[in-house]
Image (tube, rainbow, N blue to C red; front, side):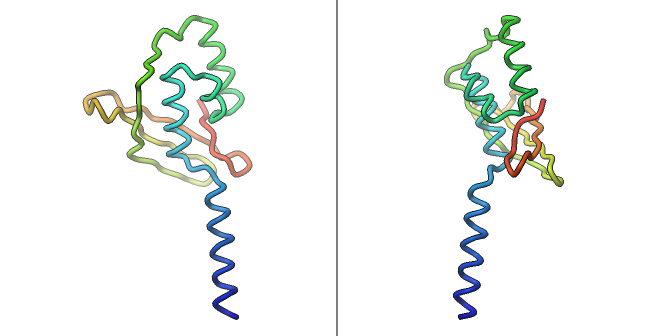
Length: 114
């Protein structure tokens, strides 16, 4: 009986963790979609204010830097309470500039905050 209780507790914990987004995947998905010009999809990983900034940048004509085959690799992160940052880099170009993405946790969901 004790083992069954422990097992069910573990399964509930794993289910809870798997439902939560993690900062690395959110930052990577946001950055890749933004670089590829998929702004609507990128905004799904961002706060409302960040989405508004993306819209404003598009209206100003800053969409010329679209790279359809671009990828990022998250290699370092830090989480403190409801804030996080993730460092990303282009795995194809080790000399490229490192990007730092800041995130906040809103109702259990990590979102990019610019």
